[in-house]
Image (cartoon, rainbow, N blue to C red):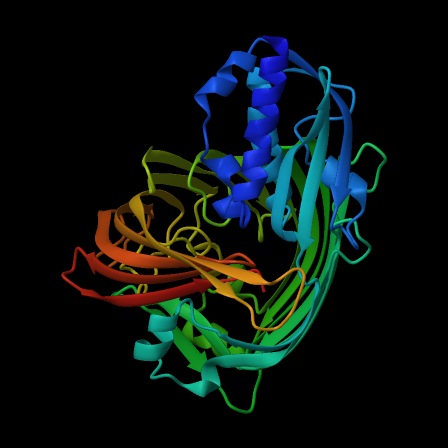
Length: 478
């Protein structure tokens, strides 16, 4: 029986590799062999882990993501789960376009593991061209496709700078706003690979400023062609702690120096507190993240949870606290079909009506599909989103340019239907239709998912005002 068990397990993992084309197509993600369950009560000793394909990435960075290590004694029923979990964790480092984890050979009850990876391109000296508006539709419709509302320049990113999944970033941006950003992130600085840091500097200035929100929940802008209206200087330092593979803690401190022109104060005296045109403050933040999903940027199963506490300023002028939570649950309910249930909540205090404290819906992950043309300010908010996804097509493009790491580029197409709910609370008198009322949108769409964390979304959405239309969104690891 034992020898049969070894044979079945070996055949099982070998078949995973033979059928694997890329991480998301890996048979390890879907294949179940009932006969292998006979191994559930057998123990296997991890005799060694061999890694290939990592030309730049250091081995300890990959081993850090494994759900087991050399010398572990694991039940056969758990080994399959740990192999799959290791594959997912390695892929979610965003260092590789493909990875496979499988049993290379078995000697008695000793198992030898093989890890094969294909590294991404890590150096991106890319021309930078990005709309400054919150989404494509707002720029196309509300701003009449104005090229004056575009940032351009060069964005240099050296990922995996020293082979330790560290990242060096230099941004030199001109156009609508001017920006200089320097940043370095090193996720691990200790031998246990649990502690890291992120340090950065940003300076930006702009000739146009969003100074208020009108009664129709649209942003109001003011600009001068020959004068800068706002500038921000920021220095920040983040300490990260990762005691387990799925858990991360972040502690951040930053120094901020913000300035607005006198002309802004004339049209909105409550932009900053006490009619100030300049504020300087230190802020602090603690962020917690738990992630157990198969793919960070487009999960089909698993869940993640995030929470944060933010403190701005040490005086009564800039003082603000904010507490928030965010969660996502993804579950496969049928072959090629899965659901997303997402929720978020936050509150700021003490309540105040200063404009620079009010942003909520339309920013960060407080996005409702069908509300792309609107923002909803507030001091507290709730968000709920439900999406049903169905994979309808997949295609692997064979690269005509010979390359060992990018010979195949996968594309997956998902149809979806969705419904979003939101609520933004403000204690102050407002004359618009969205504050202190339940918001509801719904629609259907198509998502295109590919390598380098590329997700392109086509969505036809409806909102409670009776508006509907096609909205386009893109996100990419570039």
